[in-house]
Amino acid sequence: MHDSNCHIPDCKAKPYAPAGTRSVCKDHFLNFLTWRRRRGPQMFHKYAAMTMDERDTIAAEWQKTLRLDEVPTASKANL
Ligand SMILES: [Zn+2]
Image 1 (cartoon, protein in one colour):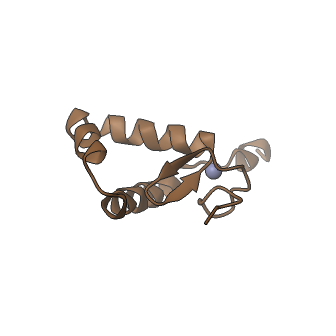
Image 2 (cartoon, helix red, strand yellow):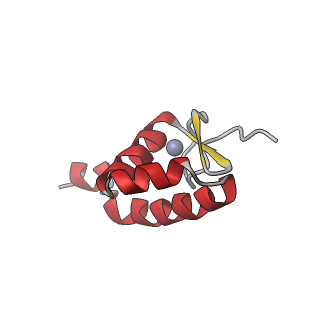
Image 3 (cartoon, protein in one colour):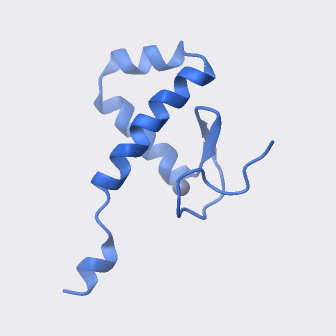
């Protein structure tokens, strides 16, 4: 079972590293890392000790924040 694309919807980049049981591209993986780091060292250690299924829950939580955080650069260019 191999993902050919990043797991994030609308992202066509190549998978780079796993976020839970899915693979995400490098940019999204780094974003995921930053997000976990922002939530403190406890989250980091907790995540490391989690099973893949539990990591999926965290990854899903992170994905919800993606849409909120993302400011499309295209809308800026139209100003
Ligand atoms: Zn991606």
